Length: 262
Ligand code: AMP
Image (cartoon, rainbow, N blue to C red; front, side, top):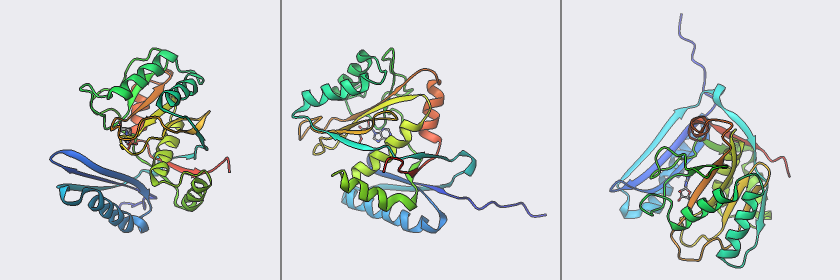
């Protein structure tokens, strides 16, 4: 008798481009077999665009997802909070995160780390800090790298509606879409209380706070234009073990398939 071959529902497609061992750009999607070629080709185009002649190494990894592991969740609703300057913006970020059960000292510690370069040598990290929401302790096993939130995407059927929603929210930048998908997954992972993010991009000064309770709150002017420092903090509540939260953030596939608030 032949082995039964189940047709995988979805594939994880990940691209990583680097030069001299330094990260240039990356992307990841969860797609059906019929879209694999188009998605991989778009990733290649993006890496060539971003890396130009510096591009030395490019990897695209495709892996079938076990349908039993796939989780589905809703898109966080988006709102934008204006702030005149970085001090006012940070104050708002701290108020928001502290308002949903993260100790103020823990938030302030994360803010200090992000503003000063969260890696041990003051450089930006590739991933997120994992921070105990009560004690403020850093829990990520490798403080240079941090924890990469991966294995998430929008269900194809709602992509156009999400794009339209972001236009209505005056946030049509593709960066917002990517961060919103990541934030929607992070917020859905059991044990995560909140996320705080500032881009490394020196020209992108809007950061955000994300959580199940607050949604995705964009905060304007979190850093001054030209500032290359950025970072991400994910606050965890200690009810679920850090290892379990980290495993879910890194490995469990999440498909954002609903817009409950629209
Ligand atoms: P970005 O918004 O891509 O500029 O990233 C801002 C910061 O978030 C970076 O400095 C990293 O520390 C962190 N980061 C970027 N991508 C991820 C990811 N997939 N998972 C966790 N943290 C990330």
